[in-house]
Length: 245
Image (tube, rainbow, N blue to C red):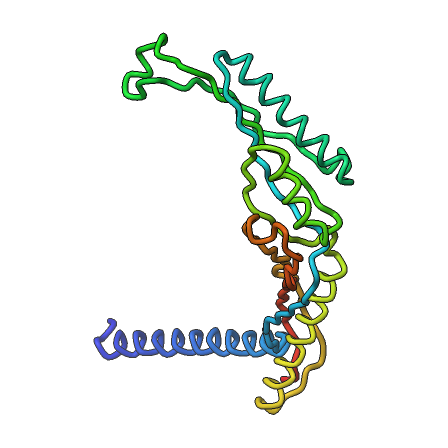
């Protein structure tokens, strides 16, 4: 006959065995975590930035040629003639054909009564043709005289001047080099403060490179020596350094 004392003893024994098993599993987990931790890298993550100043060597302007006519064909033909007059003047000034790009040619009706224009087809009083011409000026010191030439050739709209670098590969490479040096200086300073040492690089990536440009109103450069100033070429990197544990 099984007494209550025997049942109680068996229950207690089972609890003790279960506790021992749980302790063993927990100890194994701790040992495994410690083993994994010893194989982990100790790292330091920093970002660096760099900038390079450069003189622009190219200028770009957009010239808008607008013409009107009684018919759409007349407006287009007049616009083409006006655009060709400008292109010829630019060619004579030394701007080669490949540096003159025509785009966004359009023609639309002009209504006498704008309110009822959609329902009154016979309300058209003229047609207007528009043509955008992009002009690239490679002799940047000639920018002012080219703007003067465009203004004196016809009734054109000049939408400002944009100064830039034609090829910025060398400047971008120099900006990245400075960004890496900046990251290295930061990492050394942090490691010194933390009483540790850098042992290597685990990961490095270029985050961004960007070349700025400068915009000037066309009227500000006409008949005036052009001094666009420096452009800024910037770069940034992210570096994950290995450090002593």
